[in-house]
Length: 303
Image (tube, rainbow, N blue to C red; front, side):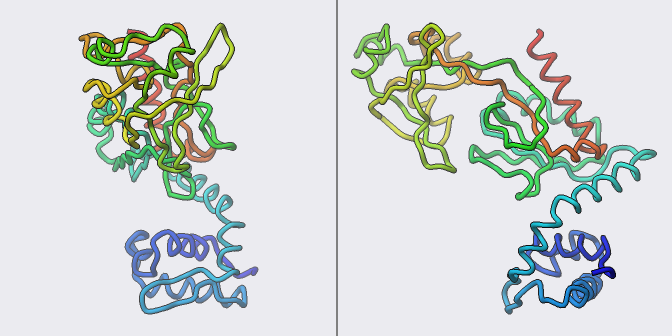
């Protein structure tokens, strides 16, 4: 494999990511024959085919799968190294992809992303809003935002917020009809608007803090949804008790649309973190977004 070059491997990875030679050519802004020739040279160097080709798609062979797995991180490291050196004399530019849950976008990113885009007009920012668990390396993201205890192993994580409590709330109409529970044992009489995780398909576990001890409870469901906006809307309409991290319900609590339930028992989560592969921050386009988020979030929590 002595004849294999970085360029050939980069094209191989791009074909995998884009699903076709023509797609890789568009991504790399080269002519399709150049991609085909690089792939052919790589396969000849290895003495093995890397793809099975049909009229509709290209699928990795076993050799292709192994090459992808064994070269993914080295290629990422080389790409970031080359990019970081080439950017020394340039303004930040290129695409930056970041994934986050819906409530993070609504509460924290929506108010500030326009300023970032105006400050760095040569950066193409891509926001992906999803409550599903995302493997940022496998899915081609530069950054992600998650609760600190949910960040994948091997990632660098920087805190964006302090610890966040999971509030239990209900509409005044619900409390008037069913009463206000005062301790964990009374919760079994009440129904909850439950959140179902998109990735695991499991219901979010019910956890309470009782003088530092974590209590796990089974609860009845009034309604189940996989969207946090639906949970809060249903709570306001009096369907049942609802659990949501405190920033999501602050306005509703302040105006009286919702009331707190047993706040002394609310469970505490690790704060939100921005996380990324250790090499990602070497790229100026990624680094400026990390710095922007850290400064903006710090300012917001100090005001």
